[in-house]
Amino acid sequence: MRIGLTGGIASGKSTVARELERLGAHVIDADVLAREVVEPGTRGLEEVVERFGTGVLGPDGSLDRAALGDIVFSDAAARSDLNAIIHPRVRERARELEAAARPGALIVHVIPLLVETGQVDSFDAVVVVDTTVEEQITRLMRRGGHDRDDAARRVAAQASREERLRAATHVIDSSGPVAQTMVQVRALWEELSGRGTCDRSRPAPSPRG
Image (cartoon, rainbow, N blue to C red; front, top):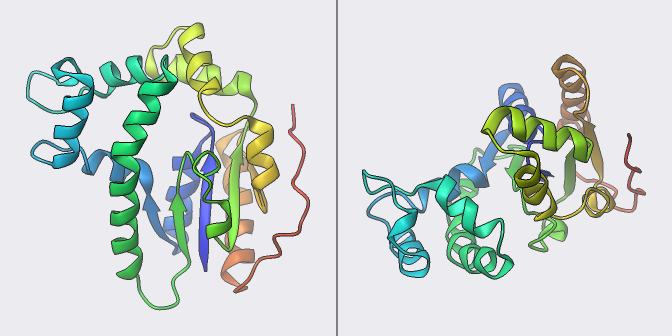
């Protein structure tokens, strides 16, 4: 069974994915792959520098993700150009990793831009990790040193909360304590690991909070 796991920036996707992996899922994280495909020496990094200049490189020649983020989160065209470089490479690598999974594995693809890139129908189920926009902004400010305007801009650059929820077959509410989130993840695991199909006709939940 192939699961697409998504959610807005700072929604808690990585926390959910780690627990699913601990429970036995085969997790393929697009964010991790996005870093791999632009490591020093890769053609991906060369193309990023060709498009955005050497200002997006750190002193050691690796990608300065903060500098690049400052560019693409304030310029939709630049963001589109970056996605055109990164996404095909990430998808190719994800296919390789999925092919190497053990037979019968429950495979979870963690894809932050799953809705934006039109991949909803590629999966047997779509799990959305959901929290309020205000909580996303607060977490970004706390963890990344962003000011409120910058954090809000990064949240707004992605699909809306409502768009993600419309695509969901399952929702994990991550707005509360982590322990509450983990209870939901374990229940999700019990459901998904015990069935081979998912009814995508289920109505999507409405936002909470």
